[in-house]
Length: 208
Image 1 (cartoon, rainbow, N blue to C red):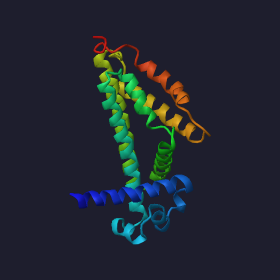
Image 2 (tube, rainbow, N blue to C red; image 1 turned 45 degrees about the horizontal axis):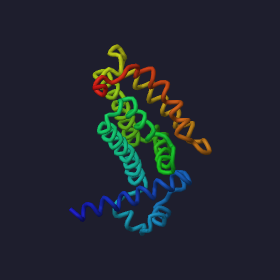
Image 3 (cartoon, helix red, strand yellow; image 1 turned 45 degrees about the vertical axis):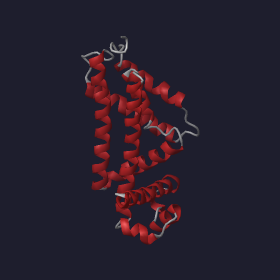
């Protein structure tokens, strides 16, 4: 088990170095040599784990999305433990998709750069499409759960509402990505209105 864990940690170490370089210098300037220097390892070690730049790129993309997903799962778990309204938990989760701090800014730049590259790369397109579908599903599930507890009217189309919320979040992320100092208050002021259109009631379970 330790050997497998070490291999995973090595791959993650390389992926994080790749992500930092991509975010700061752009994809075209990322090379194995620069990743090796950034990660403090040898080029040979990178080549041992990845056949080429494309393989590392795909792994780095998936790793970035996986970290975001892990944080969202943690947010949901904490919100459920605190008996928070679903709308509050969803807002917390949507913030994880925005470049509001150094870590999320790197993730945003990696995700957007490789999402654009996915237009001409089938393997990246598969990763990007799955990530978008997963995020949309999470939002739609939150809306469906809201129907069960009374926060959302049962007549609301969960799919369409999730599309609206996700589109607003992605557009906001793009705007904040070029802002000099994006803040949570600006993000919340943008996200609360579409959430309020969907989550119009109060959770009957938390009123007990």
